[in-house]
Length: 329
Image (cartoon, rainbow, N blue to C red; front, side, top):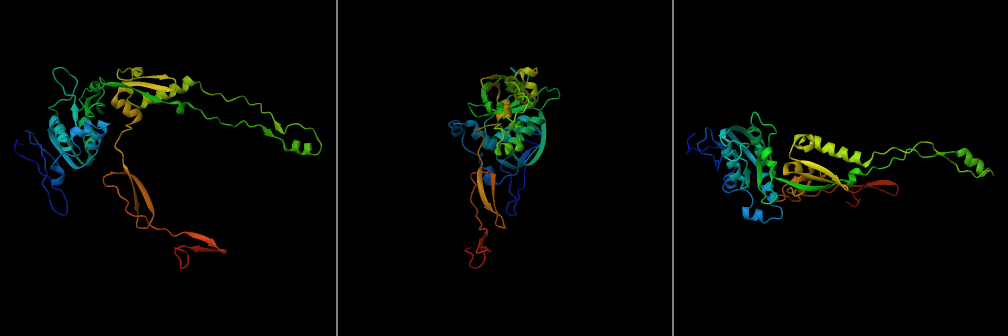
């Protein structure tokens, strides 16, 4: 496709077609187009870069931009650099790419051709698909994404490049080490002895000693090692020093795990506490029952209605419903 050719997309809104507001026209073999309404494509989504950097958690603002759903996005034999720039311009998010250059031989190839066609996916999911498509044939660890904790930018590229940016996090695990006792060795209770005692018998205790030995409990170091093993087997197994990698290390100290690792490894352990919050919506179904959802955007959250439900009660020996005449409904 020539430089001045723009792709088109039809969007079904109120029965009319709208032109795609943006298109990649940078000498691509085939262009890309996102199905958006003219109003949505006229400007980048979200806040400005200045507002993002002044936030307490700048990476949260970047994530909010990348979590917007895109109706459709299609790339056909498109340069990887052009595809990433398209997502960057569409969302307004800061995206730092670890490209191959004169200083780095491990990185993403700008001229790699990628193709994809997705519908109703977030921009972050589009990035994940692009990273999967961009994995080299001889890539050892693959590609990943993470956030820069200072600037809030999304960093994408080979894990070998992301591994150079590590930080230390302390995870409290005392609650995981606490072993609740199981009282399954209660003493026997002799009812006959109680009856004899009540008739003037001896005053011996009705409880018989149980000869069962105390329950063996795991030593603390074994319980700690079990938790460490689970983490290293599930979260990026090849990146841990204990598994032969060079990106992440873990150590126990006074009820805490001290982990030195890149951001994408910490995400696998504890997620992101600052992840964009969702709002609770209370709504009413046609039959009148109420339900709650936690996956709605706070900008569109609203209480749509609360339905009344009839209740029953026993009055003077008979059942009365609130929706019956005289029932108090």
